[in-house]
Image 1: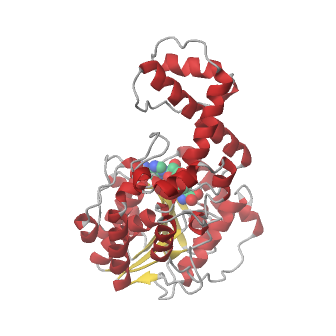
Image 2: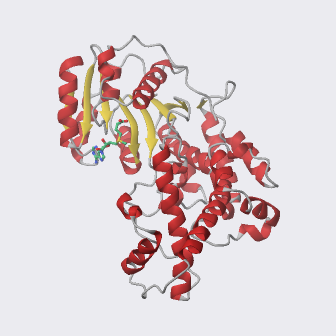
Length: 412
Ligand SMILES: C[S@@+](CC[C@H](N)C(=O)[O-])C[C@H]1O[C@@H](n2cnc3c(N)ncnc32)[C@H](O)[C@@H]1O
């Protein structure tokens, strides 16, 4: 949603935007909280029958075609009003990308092109922020670093780098790569959630985290504010990976909000699928259509009009016939023996429901980015309350990664 004239948020604009998003999300809770996958009929469909009927007649391909651009759909009201409000509330500028010195070409080897582009964009944005928040760091700390590509990119050729990662194999790969390009780098095997992450924080002046999930990034924010860390660049990810059942707001404004978010709600921002391959999409569609067909079957078998969750199943499960798959899932859920069925008809009903679900989900999809921005603004406001100067913007196009929000903070 980053536009040419959209602003990078900083100062009072952070609280203003949070408050507007909060009002929007609270007012429309009954619309975005209901999940079409688990409910055969949604409550809001009675309030907006024209919109519901219109969505229910569209095909799976129709839904797929506008999955990431639902705001452009000419659907019956109030769809277009919601879409317009969401679009306005999420308008956010992109950080100016500084051209950094070319990194040696061989540094890219073994890194997926998309990942490399994300890293280059993150690094360009970090060093190109309008207020130059993160000026000339001497000692970078890469938090949840994987193989340490981001930190290595930033520290190259002569700054200090420490990267923290709790997977020993990734650490040894990281070490091997750094020996070639950044021998001074230190890769530390460390659970960032443990007290062992404090000493590295004290040693560094600037912490970066690209796609650190849930608790890993909220813990970082708390640590950065508790320690004398000078600056932070964070692109959060997987907001739903939390120990706590419900989101624990960080900022005063977040705590004052009426919004209570559970893990299911926190997974809404992650439902965009720009990076899935065709094969992954096909398998995901089949899995969902079969589960929706099974949902029709299990309601009949149990004589109970209620959704029954099914466990996640490996891809090999979908090599079975549909009939066998249903029987095996029923056994897994300890349901009575499944009587002979018109399996072809049941499977077709599953696919039909999938088309309806995907189209109804376009409504929820309108609230995906507003909710994500609400969460990241809560983090931005927390840092501001702790005395940091904060900027929030996009570091790359959503096609490169939908998790493209970047929070830059410098101790004031
Ligand atoms: C989504 S990946 C991001 C990796 C890297 N920043 C990147 O963008 O390529 C998250 C990383 O966090 C690491 N991780 C997960 N939990 C951790 C923990 N408690 N302490 C340290 N690292 C952790 C994982 O092993 C993984 O490498």
